[in-house]
Image 1 (spheres, rainbow, N blue to C red):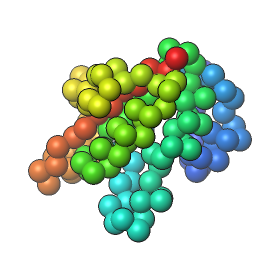
Image 2 (spheres, rainbow, N blue to C red):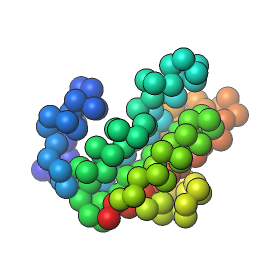
Image 3 (cartoon, rainbow, N blue to C red):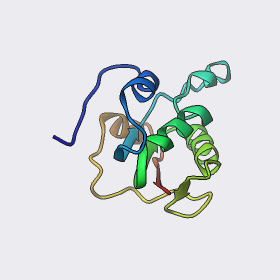
Length: 126
């Protein structure tokens, strides 16, 4: 009763189907990094999306993210640290250690096989 799975565009779902202050936690694990510079505009973690997501989190709610693409990890950190209602649980400008309770995804396993490090982030909403 407290879990929803929606197979649709995340931006549209947040805009049209999720009420403000309704999430306790949001997980965004290994979103497409769109590594080519000309495709960066397609990345999910951008200021407007994160601001909308922060509005959907309850006070005290947590946003957790992970990526195996270092340039995207750095951009995520920059974007998230700039949102005044989100507090980095590791400290501003820092990444979290991998949470023991987070199941290893197939994208994470693939990245590790390719020698990629994994960067985790966690933010609490005020």
